[in-house]
Image 1 (cartoon, rainbow over the protein chains, first blue to last red):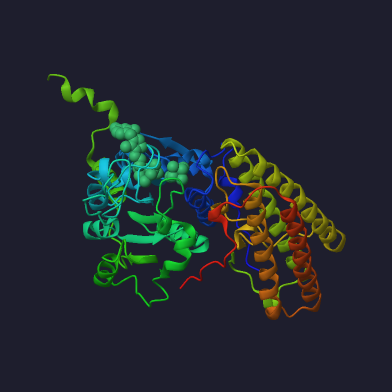
Image 2: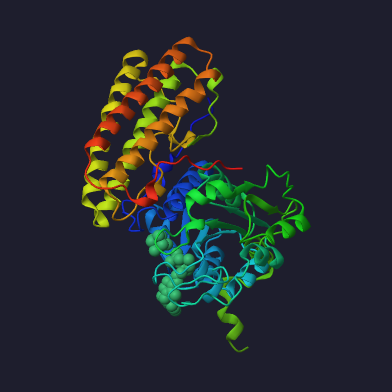
Amino acid sequence: MTALATLPPAQFKSELKPIWCPGCGDYGVVQAIYRALSAIGRPPHEIAFISGIGCSSRIPGYTTAYGFNTVHGRALPIAQGLKLANPDLLVLVAGGDGDGFSIGGGHVPHAIRRNLDLTYIVMDNQVYGLTKGQLSPTSPKGLKTVTSAYGSLESPINPLLQVLSCGAGFVAQSTPADMPGLAAVIEEAIRYPGFSFVNVQSPCVTFGEEDQQVKAHKGRMQSLASKGHDPADYLKALELATHYGVELYTGVFYRNPNPPATYDAQVRERQAELQKTAVPRERILEMFQKG
Amino acid sequence: MATQGINFQNLSLKDALDLAVLIEEEARDRYLELAEQLETHHTPEAAVFFRKMVRVEEIHRSQLDKRRHELFGDMPMTVTRAMIFDIEAPEYDEARADMSVQAALQASMRSEKKAHDFFARALPEVRDEAVKALFSELRDEELEHQRWVQLELDRAPGEPNPAFDDSDEPVAL
Ligand SMILES: Cc1ncc(C[n+]2csc(CCOP(=O)(O)OP(=O)(O)O)c2C)c(N)n1
Ligand code: SF4
Ligand SMILES: [Mg+2]
């Protein structure tokens, strides 16, 4: 038998009881996160979990990591600031499709091009769950909701294609219908040295569509590995990502085989370099004194 | 239902017993979580049934744990909960606010069937005779549990929720 993980998954489960609707896909996501963190082996006090606002954004509270349930759409800017201030922290970011791709959508390309070492997990349920089932940016065209009584006229955005085209170094997708696969991609995303993105098709049992539930996912999901996809093939990853909303591909779309230096590492390097010629703290005052 | 990193061919009796204990522990903990969810979401009757399952799974767990300690004392465990995914534990997807007792029982029936299938599928891979005997015994016990749930189902009031039919799970590609 393999060696025991030093920190069992239960170590990452907090005392706070989730208030998600029974059956919500987010229960599976938080379980997968406990497992991924257990495999990573960093203790809870070395992990910070930042989220926006939404049902999915409650997730940090259900872990024993440091958590900040921030402002709608602002998880990424806060997480980036935190990572810069304390680069030794393992920083996880999470939220919903609305949080990440409507109100927070403007932050996504910039977080990606800066390439801080963060893992961003989006629980994509194609609806605004917390506010009771309005259209979200990933809702399929024609979806009838409280804000689209006759069916949505808008085409959904494609989160996978968007993050890939912005240059994210690690892009994956999964579903709670495949718990081992979900835990594995979250672990792999955390291990990737740079910005990593995991789109989790996490069903909303209360406002979501029947064909978006776990049972339907079990019949539809197709693993990219079983299709022979090579995650180093960026162009193929782009092509596969165009099927978002039609096919349910699971696994790693893209993993940059040559990860570039992260922003946080470069900042540290520059700080060390400038430190060499910096005026010692006790002499700063002299610079402002005459004579 | 899935496993990770378990080599059934080389499984020792100690590891097999520990796995069996962990499977019951996982089921017990999940029933407790589902019961708490249903209590929060005003579904007390189904929650009472899930709490009953917490006690049932704990009895199974402690019986297996006792056997493990009689045979192997305090020898350290070399298997973990991270190696098993929802073997006998009902999946999160099984719970719904306002679910009937019938629907809760059907969820439990599916879990007992999953556990039976786990032991039945693992058995052809197992080489150790003592592990084979243990897994056969546990597989048959799961059939016994299914009969017990069926008796409860026959007595349970109300209709199952339409969303909780007993059809086979679709097979993943
Ligand atoms: C600035 C601001 N605008 C709007 C809201 C209302 N609001 C809260 S959550 C939410 C959308 C949640 O949807 P999503 O991010 O997809 O999360 P889910 O609940 O589906 O997990 C909205 C619009 C808010 N809290 N703050
Ligand atoms: S409303 Fe939907 S997303 Fe929110 S907790 Fe309920 S099932 Fe989950
Ligand atoms: Mg949403």
